[in-house]
Image 1 (cartoon, rainbow, N blue to C red):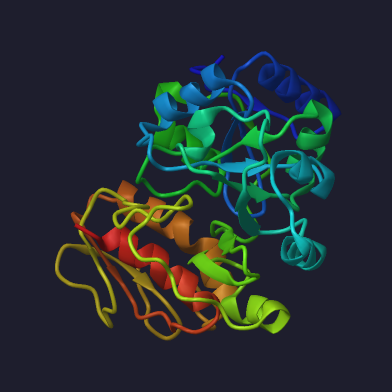
Image 2 (cartoon, rainbow, N blue to C red):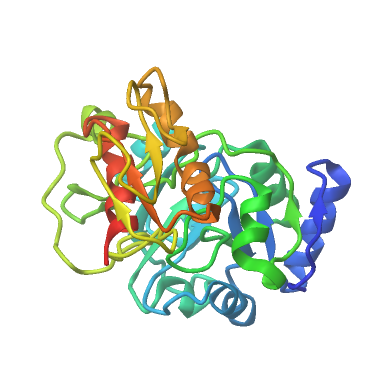
Length: 313
């Protein structure tokens, strides 16, 4: 079902059409509050294989599964009291929780990349929520772009990245958060670890659960942990207060550029515009990209995480 560069309206008719494509094993690009996701039914090995083919994604990188409700999550994973607490506070929303995979769960093996855990999220975006309710199935949905490329926050980013491989896209406009979900892993002893920073800050989770445990290092437990990721295809130079010769400048606060993530220094605004700025830089004729310094506290931690991976060689 992929390969057709078309958009679907985010209304009842468009969502019903998208749900039918998904039930039949096809792909749909759906808007979420974070980024556009490349969705397929998570119980079908053939459908999930289409995600990997379309993205050119390495098969050792697991996929996030989007659910319509906490009840759907319970069918797939062992949801303990800590997970219930997190879900009550942050679902629906931009938080992914990594939990033990339930025995017999209807999930294609490629979704978990052979791990005994599954990454689950209930999105808050009204279109994604309606689609999940309409299709009645959990949906595997990584970002709708080529693997390691800049994540899409608008329909045109999906077309630009996937080209002829782009499936039908539900046009939900620009994504509000513009940054992939925060990912946490819960351990059997009640502890938790931050696997990927995102819109929900470590401080907000710590206020609920207490301080996190240390990361386990290089083990890939969730999406977005590859060292090189979110690449615009050009050298990216960080913490620059002025553009270098032949570079596209991404400014922040008082540091101006070809684009400015937030002239007022608002980190939420910067996060929402980060990928659009990287897409603009990638499309420019200039051979390199410079980025102004971004504060490292709060949501700035997630922004810097994405920039460091984009800049990795």
